[in-house]
Image (cartoon, rainbow, N blue to C red):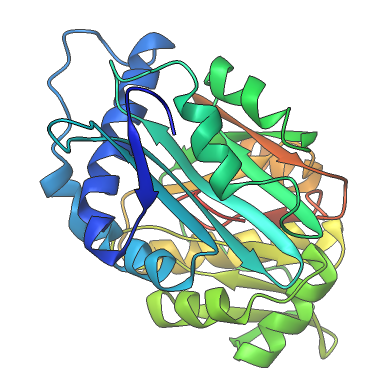
Length: 302
C-alpha cells in the first residue's frame, strides 16, 4: 500500500469506475504525446461505455488479479491494474492511473499485485508509449518483441485470391489455430469473441490456414491469424470485404510491424493509413508468432 492511497481487490461493481480511469488516463497520454490538442474537449466515458461494456464484463468475470487504488479519505478511484491467466500465460490487460494521481510507488504497488513475477509461466503486455509505465513493465520480466501501429482505411470490395475458401469458424477450429500461433489455448476468450463478432475460417486446398474475427456492431475487429505469413493477405482481404459488405465506413486494426506480409498488404496494396499512435508488444520471449498475427480490438489483450 502507498502511504497516500488504499489498494484493494476490485470486483465487478468497479468496472464502470475502472473504465473512466482507462479513458481519462488514455486521453491524458495522447495529449502529452502531442496526438491530442490540450484544449480538446474531454472524452465522455458515458458515451463510449456501451461499446466496451461487454468486454469489461468478460474481463471482470475471468481475471486472474484485479486491484484498484483509492484516495484514503474520499474513496475516489486513483488507478487500477488487471491481469488474466490463460493456461500458462499471464497477460496484463490494463494498467492505468488517473491524471494528477501519479503518487510515488502507486504504479509499482499495483503491478506487484496484478503482475507479480511468480505468476504465470509466460508473461505479456500490450503497452502504450507511456515512458514511466514502460520502465515499470521492464522490471517485471518482459522485453520488447515488436512495435504495433494502428492502421485505418475505408473498406472496399475485395475477396481472397483464387485457391482460398472461407466458412464459419467453430470454437475448436479457432482454438487449434491459436495454440499454434500463441502457444496456449484461451477458451474463455474465444467463446467471448465468438459471441461478440463473426468468425471465419480460411482454407487453402481444403486445409485450414487462418482465421478472421470480423467487425462487431461497434466496428471492432480481430484477431486475425494465419499458420504462415503468406496467408495473412488473403485473411485480411476477407476481413476488408466483409466490412465493406456490412457498410462500415472505416476499418481500424492494430498491426504488429513484424507481420511484414500484413504491412505490405494493408499499407502498400490497400492504402490503409498509419495512425500516429503506437504500442509495444512486450513479453518474456518470442513465443507468440507476431509475424502472422493481428490482435483483438480494442487492443487490451492479444
